[in-house]
Image (cartoon, rainbow, N blue to C red; front, side):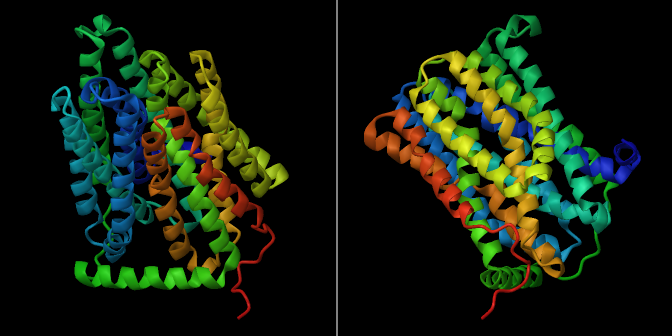
Amino acid sequence: MGRIREMFRDRRVFSWALYDWANSVFATTVMAGFFPVFFKQYWSAESDAVVSTAQLGFANSIASVFILIAAPILGAIADGGGARKKYLGVFTALGIVMAAGLYFVAQGDWAMAALVYVLATVGFSGGIVFYDALIMSVSSPDRYDEVSCFGYSLGYIGGGILFAINVAMVLSPATFGIPDSAAAVQISFITVAVWWLVFSIPLFRNVPEPPRTSGTASAVATGLRSLAKTIREHRTHRMALLFLLAYFFYIDGVHTIIRMAVDYGLALGFPDDSLIVALLIVQFVGFPAALVYGFVARRVGPKPTLYFGVVVYVAVTIYAYFMTSVIEFYILAVVIGLVQGGVQAVSRSLYARFVPAAQSGEFFGFFNMLGRFAAIIGPSLVAITGLLTGSSRLGILSVIVVLVIGAVLLTFVREQEEAEPAAA
């Protein structure tokens, strides 16, 4: 508890972590919560449910592909130093403006809604690259883990608080002087933008900018060479490479379920207010469950614990195919909340076993690039399968493909492998 109080009192650390509190509301209220609901019921109301699911799936994939391609270049710019806060400001502004812009998209204009959403997601994801890089401005390497977890925890809580307020607005609009639930959802997009803006200010005021080490063009060229070098290094660290392949697939499945769950529930005809409550369940079950999951991992080992989590996601996806009631959706929300945070946290700790200490920055930069932006294959699978079969149930079931591939690859990962290059 003393270390936690110390981080609250450290103005630079707290200001940095507060950005997680600020931008996480976009992930909870917009990406996972209201955008899928409003997209299907307001912007794409005249489309068949399978078609609107495909539109949402492709939008998520497009945003993820764009930022995945851009991430190495953005990371290179960040590594050059001297302009991290500047570029963070650019992407933050893009995300904030586009989040607020969803308020103004006319009913039935699904194409504009998808475009604004993609741009907002690019702003959100692109900003994270520079936000992550600023951790070295507020902490020493021996405290990176605890400071990083501090930010993650604030993000969980902040995202949950505003989402709970927004849910209350939608479920009881009259209490807030709002005419109806549709207007409440639109206003929620504005609250996300305002929250994101206000709580980002401390970072820009209190977090120092590292000195510039190179120009932007030089930083990009250096960063791309470093990326190529890291890829080559992974080829000589076989367990690190094998784990990354497994991670890429199963985390893509995890993120797909997060982003597409509400849309799937709507396609089954479940009430939107019930689906939003289910998301709240995930949010608030997930925080303490992640702590317990970490304790279990310390007792039985990271790989068995992680494998269990991936298998749970496979079981959840199969169960979702047969789901017929809102109560079952709530049950799935609790189950997902129990493993969601743990899978993400334990993945990092397992990967650390295969990383050479002298190259931890390069290796974890690559790991974070895959983990933060993986939602490419799954959403496209859901979209294509749904369109080809005309079934939303088969669409969500297709997520099993990436989860199973990840699980199978994970079985070949050996925990005891030393973080040394493989023999030539």
